[in-house]
Image (cartoon, rainbow, N blue to C red):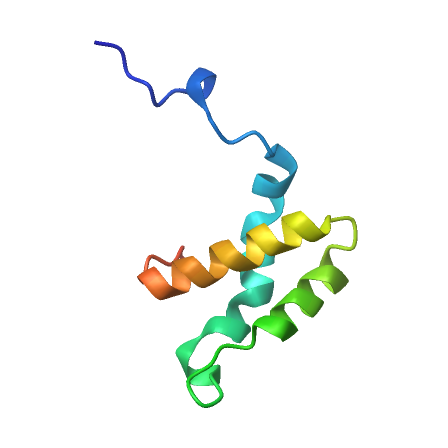
Length: 82
């Protein structure tokens, strides 16, 4: 049986988005932390605006992917180390 976890079997293809994700995640961190919630709600609308300001070359789809992924990481509690 072969191991299907090597780079030749990588399913994710957007390497540009993967390369900026750590910096984008750090930029969005304040908008999803529990201490910054307003009436229990995150500040998604501000996260979108901040991401567009920090990474103006990202497409609308890429911005959506990064914000959604960040939201899911916070909801699951599986946060990368700062």
